[in-house]
Image 1 (cartoon, rainbow, N blue to C red):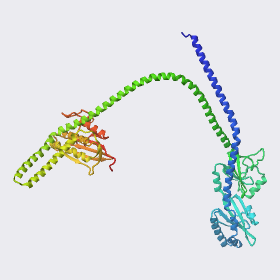
Image 2: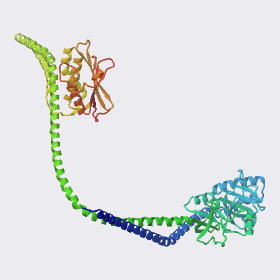
Image 3: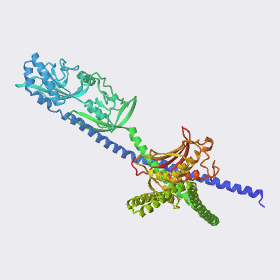
Image 4: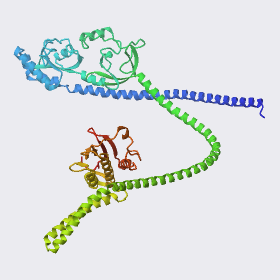
Length: 620
């Protein structure tokens, strides 16, 4: 007997074991977490410099591509101003600036500008006033404006070709100006200017992956992917320098305020790895890659927020954490698997013992199942044989009902044969051989007719296994009507037939379909017994891939409460009969994927509808 003391000792031991396992797991998790923290710090220290160098290389390559795009655009128009300045038309008009000549100059500049593909082409007199422009007839026409304050005019008026970038005074668009002096006999008559807008180039650059700045030698941002950075200085400018820039009106009316405050030192914005920019009221540090557009004196800055670099580092840390976690999980899995394997080994013996006992039970159950299957197969064979016997019995029962009609159908041909034979004997005695030959011809026709009738009954009565084949529906119906005509004629029932002109092919055992038709016609004949002008109609309809055979009579019809019972085996309203005809008929059609239903005719009587699938090989 186990005492209460033993129970307490056992519970205390289990508690100590569980407490030890919890402490061991806590220590293990703490060690793994500490290892992860230390390794992540080491990873960040090792990866940061590598990621920063890669980002700087990426930005430098991006800036070089941007600078190349701008240089390519400017290179298209380099030297064009010098070429235009040598055109005779310009020199002629400037030599004698009369109104007719100025009008000719405007049209000439418009046509030339269209050919060059530049934005504006205009000519200035020595006083700085525009006397002719390609946009002379537009709302933003340059004609009449004075640009003497522009440095490009001042230098060109002194005889030098010059290029210059600025914000347009009329269009307010950012563009580049190529200016050249117009000389005749060594004397400067005026200045021609080719103006190229750069807004489309800046829009393409802004759509790139990284932010960009286009900075002039004066530290003013001429273009940027961030509209809030444009026309601002990268560093604090002396007030005198800012005033001189404003006087040139290169940047329009913009304030040129610094983009960020640098209180500690003046940054070297053209060489530092980082640059500070304010966006949305927040100052951020950006990694910078630089490239130079030498022709214009621009510096292209490709920018990446330092936060993006931090995101890359964090992304790398996430990947490292995932790998670290997978390794830890694998180690824990291997550790747990070792423990489970030991437990599995201890359970195998018990499982083997249970399996051996269950195997004997399953063997017995399998033997019983095989016996049940064999019994089912025997029962299925017996049912099929019984169905075949029922079908054959139903056919013989129909033949029995038709026997009187058959006797009447054959009796008249036999009497005719007897009459023709007796006449032939008398004619033969009188040597009237021609008439004898005619009688013999009539006898042969009668025997052929009797043979056709008997052969139809023989085919119908023959017991043979089902042999489905392609048969014309019209042939099946004609064969069934030939068998049924004696009975219908004797019962005084008229018959009508509506068949399709070309017939339709179905896959079936034709004798079985004939049996169903004969059964339906027999039922119709019996239902119309004692009715004047009794008629039955057989109609064939083609309905969307199916053949419908309708047997319609003008009898009293079937009561609604009996329509759901007439297809039940052994149900009958006749004084004689087994009540299996309709049940067997429906079963025969269902084995052919067809159906048999009874409906009430709108004009009285009953309609039995046989539905069979039309053969797919038949064209619709």
